[in-house]
Length: 191
Ligand SMILES: *[C@@H]1O[C@H](CO)[C@@H](O)[C@H](O)[C@H]1NC(C)=O
Image (cartoon, rainbow, N blue to C red; front, top):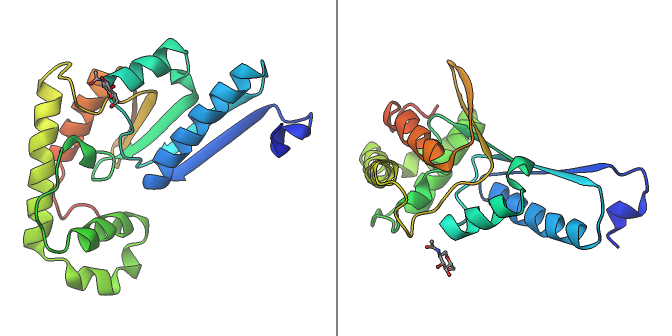
């Protein structure tokens, strides 16, 4: 038995993570859901991710729906965040400073004042190139219903911007929102 469950007062477990940590939180939650189901436990699991990259394809998403685990997942996605969208591009462009660029993108949302060294390694050209690269594939994914091989969202998505928030559950609608919100931003608006 897991240590957290030795306490008989445990009624629910919340698992959370940011960016790649969000994908890990989802995997962790799936493992836990399967485990709790196996031991017929009534403890509930809620997974809340922030800016998590996509995790699996259509079959993966279907399997989660079939187990009725979709409602256990809430994914927060902000308007300009490239991380939840990046895996719609099957490969990455050959941008010399890609790693710095991704870190820049991530930190610029979390803590704009601490960019210092990173910002110096990132050019506007590189930023624009990565932005348009991801936008192209996102457009493709949003307009080609049910194309195999694409990553497929599961669970509820909460899209957040300055104007407010909207919750979307259908995976096709999630991909469309990912695309629409991103194209109405720009490589420089992620501040
Ligand atoms: C999803 O990925 C798994 C593992 O790679 C593969 O077996 C399956 O055929 C894929 N499903 C779709 C719909 O692409």
